[in-house]
Amino acid sequence: MLTKTINAGWGNKFRKLFRPRDIFFHDGAALRRVRVGAGVQISAALVATMTLSWSAFAAAQLATADAAPQSADVARMEQEVRAMQADVAAIKEAAQKRFQITASEVRGLGLDPARLQTQDGVGGPYEAIDGGQTADPNFKALFMSWKQLDSLEQGTIAIPSLEPVKGTRFTSGYGVRSDPFKGRAAMHAGIDLAGPMGTPIYATADGTVGRAEWNNGGYGNLVEIDHGRGIQTRYGHLSKSMVSAGQRVKRGDLIALMGSTGRSTGSHLHYEVRIDGKAVNPIPFMQSSDYLQSVQRRVSDVAIGGPVKAE
Image 1 (cartoon, rainbow, N blue to C red):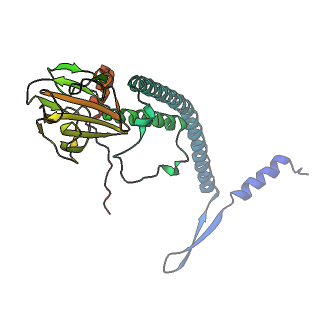
Image 2 (image 1 turned 180 degrees about the horizontal axis):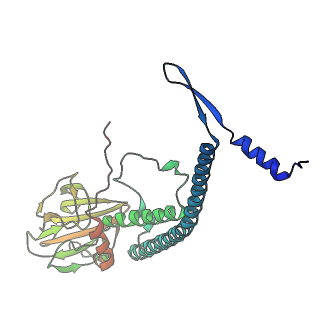
Image 3 (image 1 turned 180 degrees about the vertical axis):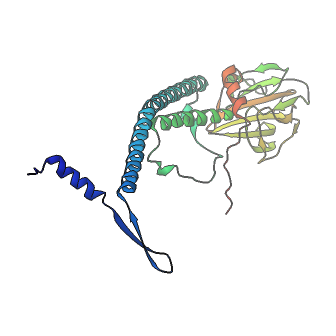
């Protein structure tokens, strides 16, 4: 008597799985039949199993090998971000410090720095940056610091800070004095700098010539320059004007020659600084610090604009 065992059952299943099979195909002329034996099927199954096993092993190896480099890349990127943020913070601090120094110099002249922070002469096409919603707050803060500094430093070129004439004698100061013609106390709205007839006279700040004409109020030949931000300078008693109304001038440009026209006792320059139409003492402006003058030199030749897009 034969006993059916479990192994025998698995053996039958194995033989049924790989039993000979007939495969039919049409070769274009007739229907053909090919019998695939158990050995061929087993061999193909072994090859497929080995291929899958090798693929799984290779994938595992790659995953293990990539884990460490990816971790190193993430660490490096985080370090670079931290370094960049530190740089941004340092630049912002430097901008704020320079702004404070410049503002202090401006206040020393009796001017409010806010007066100089208005924007003029700027432009360019508008290009939105990602809707303005995703800008890094650190970079936004840095941008605002530099914008504030740039606005103030651009404004300093309107501050008179140069001697209008060289090699002259200081003959009369700003304020109340004895009038040279009437001999009684009178207000002198500027300073007098005496020198030879025809001595060159220079603009003390960037600006636009408002007047270059004869003045019947005592100035004689007068040049008046509007420097913006409510600041003006006046140059009186000239023998000759070298500029005309509406002309743009830069700090240090030749604008006139010294003379003795108008209410004058001899060859000299009457020089005034006015703020919002009111005369102030020009001496502090002529003695402004090297720092303020270096700022003016740095920004006086900077032009602001933007690219033109082809349509």
